Length: 347
Ligand code: TXA
Ligand code: MG
Image (cartoon, rainbow, N blue to C red; front, side, top):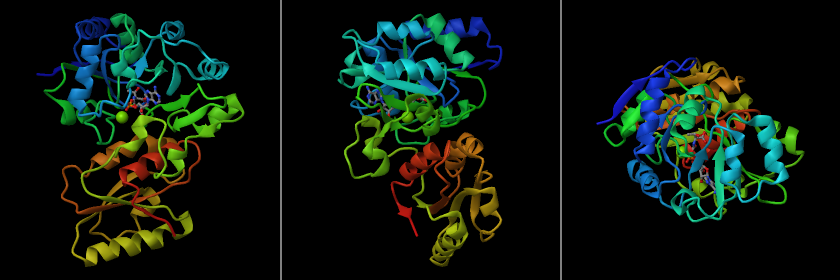
């Protein structure tokens, strides 16, 4: 059975968090909110507990986990070296949706790092997350709290629909504010490398670093990813999805053309679209609106809920409308491409 705790995100009950922290210290699995998505936590220094995360999620063992800490100083206990780029990023964006990859110390368990000589570390902004980590007194290993391959969870209900009965507890603090995962930056390369776009935008990274390399796996699905997590199907709704990436001028025409083709073939069609687009679709389409086309922060916040909304609807195929890759749009498009399994219509 999964224990359910409810807390106020602005004023979390510390006796509740102390109970959950005690579970973590005992080697149990506790799902908890962060500002990005819900995480599935375990004591990051307890290899057996961390192995339980992989088991509960059905996650491939070579996909390493992020260690979550609650003070900047704790990075000194995990990193073998902290490059200047990492210091600059941390100084500006911690606590927050930023994960840095640095050389690890040898006591960091292999099960956390997937056997790599690096470790990914993040100091979340969420008060609930930080207090939980502080009370646990250990770094907390946590991937997103979804079944591997599914859209990440942004509510406690999402977590329970994937993992109820497979984890020991969940802390519900309401929906996550950002809605897409943290930005992952490899700080061990001469020029830091963006491995996963996320809550800290590309523009914000450039502001601090001046330049950044982009992992080729982000641009092209064929190349070999440096971040092990990038090579698996991810974020996918149950029905196959196609992503339309044409510019805003033609998007309505192309989406409607594709959707009408699918309807004519007798399919039940779902669509993940902007508010502007929703009005132009045939009425029999089951539309899930992610927000106004230019509000990338709102689209990010709604994205996974929109993808999960088809779980209990019998659609045969889903069409998604792409957005511009500015600000949080870069992270949104990265997730949409992966959710579509790179079935992209570009015209
Ligand atoms: O927002 C987030 O980052 C959430 C919350 C819970 O903090 N966590 C999360 O974890 O998204 P996960 O496991 O779903 O994604 C972690 C990503 C994966 O793409 C993984 O491959 C990468 O970080 N990663 C972890 N350790 C790494 C390492 N040592 N080198 C390169 N990539 C690493
Ligand atoms: Mg994940």
